Amino acid sequence: MAAKHVAKPKRSRSDSSGSGGFGGDKSASSELKQEVACLRSELADAVQIIAELRAENARLRLLPEPASPPRLQSSGRFPRGLRQVSSQPLVFTIDDFVDAAMCEALLSPDSSTDEQAAFAALVAGELFAGQWGVNDRQRFNNASSSDRNNDASALVSYPSGLHVDTNNEATRRSVTMILYLTDVSPACGGATCFPIADAPDNDSAVLSAKALLKEGVTHTRGAVTAGGTVPAFLHEAAAMLEARHSVDDGAASGGGGLRIQPRAGRLCVFFSRTADGEVDPRSWHGGERLRPNIPDGPPASAPPALSAAEGSGSEVSGAVLSAVEGRGGSEEKGGGGGAAAVTEKRILTLFKEVHYGAGAGNVLAWDGQEANLGAFLAPQVSKQRQYLEDLAKVHAPFFK
Image (cartoon, rainbow, N blue to C red; front, side, top):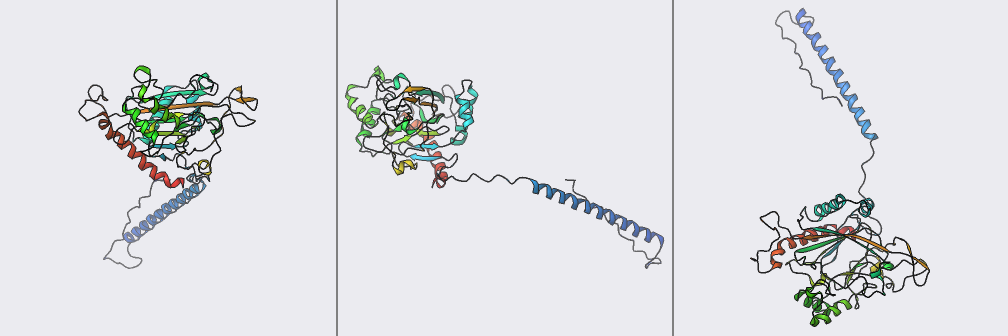
């Protein structure tokens, strides 16, 4: 569009005291002619501006309408919506946190640290107000129903026991993000399970979980505890906790618990520490054994049929979030139906540790001035928890 027209100054006729009147002297007539010419020029400019405005209006009418916001699907899913599914431990899920292209890029053998850095930056930017720590770590996990240690006949079946994410001496770890890169059908197992999620304080398994943590045990099989074994006096506590989790279907023996089913692009966020910085005894978790996908019938030890609440993705304990069909791989022989497709599970896990910013020496060093490590970690952990709880409340109406 042309630059805005600047009106030319009008010229006024002289108020002659000479012969005056209509048809006065020549100077007055000349000034009148000049004024008429000026008005005609201004009129021409106005006509040009109007023409340009009409052309601009016509051009805008031809532009496509702006895209309307995505409408909620009948399933109730809200794209990229943060959903709280447990309070103890504090667990959230986000479906479609990354798209299919990002999943494929991360799965590619040619995947570089650029894709992993992009994922970490996305998590920090959208969920932690940009906060990140120098000790934040990522790890890929690949599992298959054909893995030797995933076979029910193996000496130690996959998964091996239950653990909390402060194991392997990651004492300052506060929150874990699991990004599922492949779909796994509920009939094929593979869910991430929290068997005592939201269980009451007097629950025998919760008491066992606390007893284990009190003695520094962070894995029920003792693989990463001092000496590589669980102390003898805690064997019963470890067995009690494991009894609430079945590697075949992930269900707690007495009902309840929480299962997060793998779905490509889904993010599971859970806190290993409570708001006061202490390890959450209800954050013990493990995975279901992967089973082959048998096309002619359900695999052996298949989980029971979903209840109405489970199938709808309800937030009640024991919910199975969004059942999806598994992706097939190579073939193996399965019971009851001939050839079965191998079930594969691929995840990328991001572990976040408390980080208070730059400083002299080790920025995560505990100087012992606080009464305990939990008190030292609590300020940041409590802020992280509150930030996500508030965000989930904002998104909650979209899941109704």
